[in-house]
Length: 198
Image (cartoon, one colour):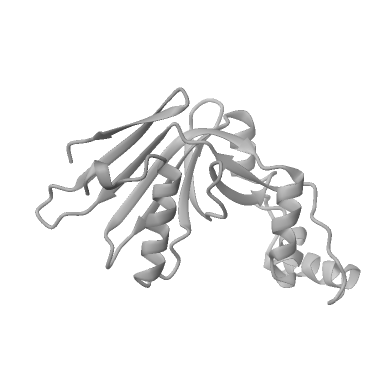
């Protein structure tokens, strides 16, 4: 990987690597780990789905979930996308987080399958439940209130976040262990691109 061949913008470079992973047959190239921390620094990480790249890495969730509460208290996150065979690549990004607009959240909500919308509306993510049957009861109640073919509005507690990276690192595996590592660092309105030792 040569620095001169990379895009000057890391999010455009990430889009190119995503396209390459799709073309190579990666089953879910948008799978992304999001790491957050509580206000007192206790970390947590989980998988989400990358749903947009401009102007940052966007994902959607229940805003009252653990990750939503952590991002409200400490609006910083790190993201990792990792593609195994055949591309052997990884991208890491970190920076401040902002909520997506209500309009963007509603627009994405409408694209989700009806059953997924219903289940998300019935489930308060990360909350304690008595058992699976209690959750199924809430889903059935939601079905009765919003039968097939009717609109199910986006709950106010459901939205999204966008990681606005200050650092983005591209990693390309090498069989001899001398992996390529290129880091973009934000410097005012521009990016500094530098090679890192593996």
